[in-house]
Image 1 (cartoon, rainbow, N blue to C red):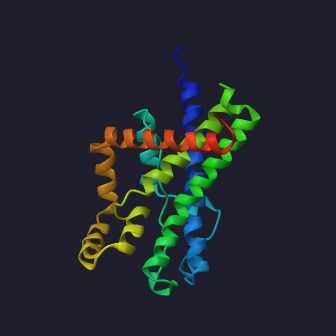
Image 2: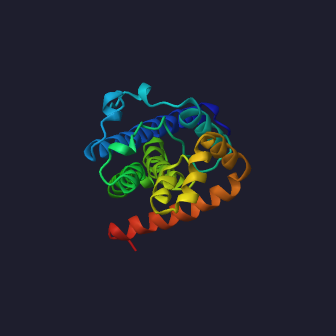
Length: 216
């Protein structure tokens, strides 16, 4: 029997996980930038756990809602933390470290949720507790993998920028203006291909987590 109330509860849980995970993702960016010498995020009040300072209506709400409706892997984003690469130690390489900090935070959150879910037996619970544990793993892996795509303004493009020749950097800078539209088009037009990439990579990482925690 179809239970619309349960679907609504699942949706709220997913949005909350996306919100918390993306806020911590952005805090990781800002924290590493601060450690590398740039205080822009701190000066603008973005080194905060207050979700209001980080919510982006499209990336934090619309895209997760759309993916939930499409029954695909869930991912999203928040307002990018401002970083002035001119202040960073290491310049482009410093910016690459700042960029990697966000996906690494999601990787860490996914691993923590996996360890908790596995050793408490929550993954065998088909109620809300099991759903929360599983979605914490899957959503954070989705956020990590999506943000590592080398498309401006996603984090993967910052890493690519550090090793790219000047001509490629100029192209990437020009594309960044239209970054949000590129992301929306990617999700809309290439949603099936993107879902396959995410599912394949997520399965591999979950197998890796299983091996790390002593599983077969």
